[in-house]
Image 1 (tube, helix red, strand yellow):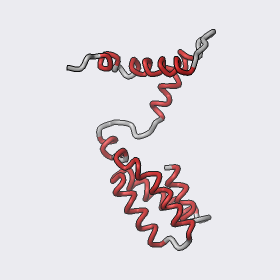
Image 2: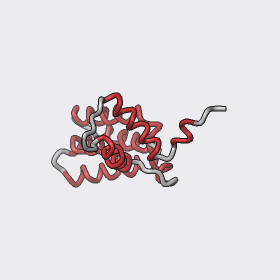
Image 3: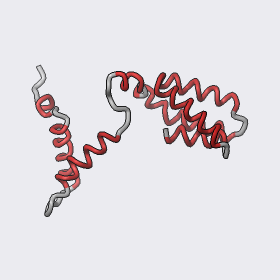
Length: 136
């Protein structure tokens, strides 16, 4: 949404109300319809974009989102109870991995810390056994 908000500010300049309305419209389209939805909103905005910076902001937003189009299925993820943000994962890393790395007297080399974090993530996600299971 940070990128959507930035594009909205360029589209509407100082008009905070119009920028907020467009941002909300884009957010709803993204949450409900993913890539096709946000593409429709951006295409409509391109029709009214009269200045070069407005068109550039929409192009920049499209260039940012398009490589992630397959992962913008937010409605499906929300319907199945899965998170769409990274906050839960970041919080888990901070608490679970951070505690281990910051123990009194602990000294870590970056490669070893990365390996420990990967193993710790398997334990935290309850995927330890699945990860180590031999394929058939």
